[in-house]
Image (tube, rainbow, N blue to C red):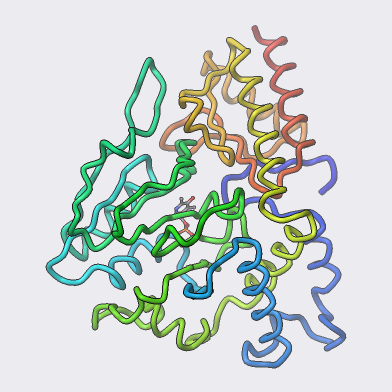
Length: 361
Ligand SMILES: *Cc1c(COP(=O)(O)O)cnc(C)c1O
């Protein structure tokens, strides 16, 4: 909608041109007289959508041939179970790096399946949160895998360095950072991401898994969570979320046309820097994350005078700036500025914040 910027953490805004194309194609897709969501996932037409989406994603992230790309149901939280079910044999343990709410939630689920070693990796230095030095992490050389969350959506903590796990498979929950910057996929065993932040609508989950990790799922693994079955059936063991898959494909095309992940990273850096700079120079707003770990996608901030919170939120909304309320567990505000958020949205937010500060100081 014109004049409105949606800062929701997820489901998040989608690129405007993608929404316009989806609207145009909604009831009569490719002159079939029906919607893409009303056709068989096994039809030639849909298989083409599916294949193109995978091809474009592989191109965008430069995914090596020895990785499978799976289009699953179940969201990020489904993967909190799928990861141990597929990778954690009975009797072994896994290391979980905890940097915030989502990595903590991943631990809680994984603990149903085996021995989970927790490595708390956030420290506070002069009132600011930062991720501890990777070299100080007490990693178990016999762990089945190491799990971490490169971007903590709630806490606004991002890790840009890929931890060196000395050959132990590294598993990453990239739900809120995938496609925001280039990554070296070959450094990972498994990458997963719920779609509703940077990929498309909710209901779709991407899994990128290295071939040699397949074939080890526990016997009791539900088939829909089994990477090996999903890979063998090309993500069509059960009916995939076809419409979400189609929309993800449109998002990948949009991103390619923009110049790909290298290009969007530049815009993401510019957006985040502008917003953090504005927060830092103000004594009205604060952010509590150290510069090196500030998320480019989710910017939490607090009003020093929290009694102004509801006025801030309602006036923001009147000005077309939506969904700025922080996660209920941490309070304050949060601006989620994923790939689809244009620079103009961040600029409009800064203008509003500046005016609000002048009027309420
Ligand atoms: C949103 C999010 C999730 C949860 O995804 P669901 O699809 O709701 O299960 C998990 N991890 C991270 C980092 C997220 O941002």
